[in-house]
Structures are given as structure tokens and as C-alpha cells.
Length: 360
Image (cartoon, rainbow, N blue to C red; front, side):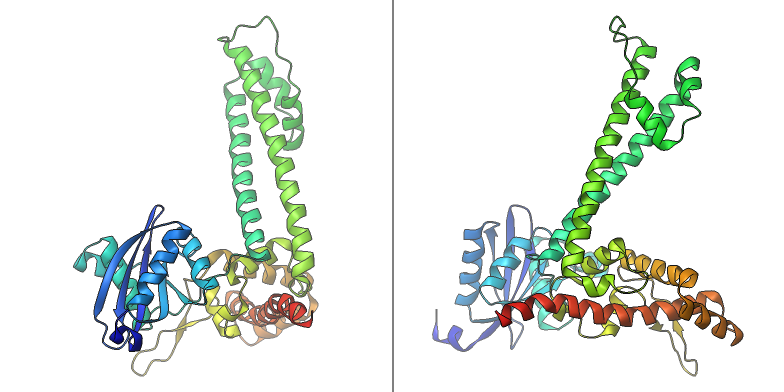
């Protein structure tokens, strides 16, 4: 380490991949490129990357692409070493068309995004109960998708099945059909290439797959309920919020409550905050089509639930209709109001573990 590197402050950018990470370091004062290098995506590689970046100056911040995928391990390592990490989005298409695409270019762009403060997002911590909720929900979602596909295949097979088999099973509803198909008997003397016998075998196989997936989904629902009851009581106490909405909102917000500086930031994150669309003498706002659409959907369903069962919300609807507002406009206002409640509950739930540790 030279005398200059002892007084110089630097920022780093990292383009992450499955097997390797490419890092670039810029002078924080001048923006000059000081070097770029490739490292293995292993714990030893993470440490070499950090040591190399620190040898070029006082490392202030590291911008990482993909902190939720290939960069998760590096993010955890840097966080454990006390290094500030910023999540960097991939470069926009205009820049890529103009500059080209390579690992060094992406790493340099990540460092420049940090230096210019165009990237300011704090990455989500993935070492707490919120990460467990995310993993369970992701696994349950794939199980539900597979169950739906298997059920569609059963109906498709029935359309082409022999007439006697189709007539026998046509009158059953979903649950009864799966149960009946799972108990279909297969003649021991039947040939494996007989389409009639094969249809029975495949129907039974698909039905048993659905039964297994039903058990897996039910187990996931129980796990989610237990985790959320323990760690998100304030969120579940809000009118209209169940385990599905609470799980989605926690996943969107992340474990670290400091990612959300205000209720407005949560509204923007969920696509609920209106966006200015003014020009000249015209002042107006438009809908925000961005944000996390899954979280937006959860908030929408909370509002719809309240419109059906929550008397204060129903009275608000009647009053605003008398003022000339449309139902769509009223729902948008209600979604923004719900975010205020959600923000307070999220802050209370996410801060609870920290307080208990400090008290201990």
C-alpha cells in the first residue's frame, strides 16, 4: 500500500456471476479508474477482492449488481467486514448500446452509479425470518403452479380417455376427481402399450402427485402462519391483512427496516404513490405503474376486503362518491392510506428483535 493509497478514498463496483465476480475501483474524488480485476465467487475470493480494493485506498462503498442472487455471498461477506454496500441495477439499454457489454464495463458502471449517487438502495439482509418467509413462499408458489399443471393434465387426459372411463369420472368435482383417480385400479394383466390401461395409470400418477403437492402446500401454509404470528403480530393485526398479504409485504420490505426511510418510500416501493406528470401551466399526477406489483396486488386486496367488511371504509366510500369521485379514484386513495398503517406495523415488527437483543 502506497502513501497515496493511505489518503485516497475509493469506491468499488462489482459485476457478479455464478463462478466469478469482476470488480472495478474508482477514485472517489476524481472518478479515475484505478484498476479492475476478476475474482472467484468463493469466500476466499471475496476476501481477496476486499483486500485488493482496500489496497488502492480507503474503501468507502461497494456497489454490487445482483445482491439477491449471485452477489448474495459477497454482500454477506462485506457486510460482516463493516463495508457499506449499495445495490446497483443493471445499466439501461441505451448505455449498453452505446458502450457495449462486458464484465469490466459493467463493474465500472456499477462503481460510477455509486459515485454519482444514482444508486442509493440498501440491499436486503438475508439472514433473518424475512428470508425464511421468502424461501417458503417461493417454494409454495412453485408447488401451486405444479399442482395446477397436473390438474389441467388430468382434465386433458379425460377428454381423450375411453368413453367408459370418461363417463365414470366426468361428474366429480376437483377434490373428488383427484381422490377417485388416485384410487384407480390397474389390471395386472394389462399391456404397458395399451392406451386404455395407460390412461388409468397416468390419471392415478397425476392424482397422487396432486395429493402430495396439497400436503406440501398445507405444510408451507402452517410454517408461514407460525413465523408470521411470532415475528409480525402488528402486521397481522391490521384489518384485511392475512398471512398471504403479510408474507408478501415483509418480502418486499426486507429484513432491515432502515431500507424504508418513510411511509412515502414504502408507497413508492409498492407502486402506490402517484407520480408528478406536470408541464407548463398544467399540474397533475398519474398512476405509478412501477414498484413491486405483487405488493401492490396485496394492498389492493386489503382495500377490496375492507370495502366489503369494514364499516369505516364503507362510510368513506359513500362520502367520496357524494363528492364526485369515481370508485377507482377512491380505491387509489384508500391504498395510499393503507400504506400508512402498513409502514407503522412493519417498523414495529422489524424493530422488535433488535430491541429484545439490546434489552438482553
